Picture (cartoon, rainbow, N blue to C red):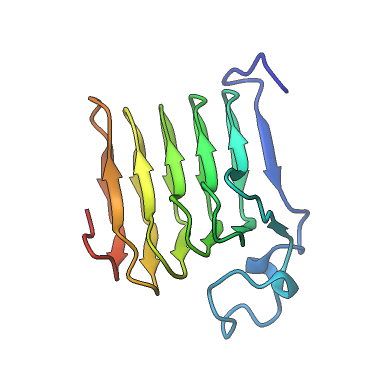
Length: 168
């Protein structure tokens, strides 16, 4: 693992220029969902776990597609570090417990969070998380779009939450 993060010492995971789904020649007509042929993609079929766990501080995940295709997964992201940013990404799962689960001071901005079947929660946020300009949807009637846990005060701005048994 990596440690020692600070505002001047960050880790950023993003694809090279021209390699992401947003750079695809057919970006205006491509369906907005996980399609590996459209750009760099992470496919983690992880049974009873997450595709990616971010526990370090000052980490940025930017502009990638990521999914967990296992129907018994815990979810796509588990984030417990502080000052973690997930942005401009496609996050998709079949039927996880969570699409994205956060536990601290994270920023979730301009993502598609899509669950495609079964029960689950699109986004579970913890203390002091900032959630802006995301689309959080399900095609399978999953349980809840957003669940707010812990005693903090998460901030939500300009999100679309649709298709859930309970949106928030």
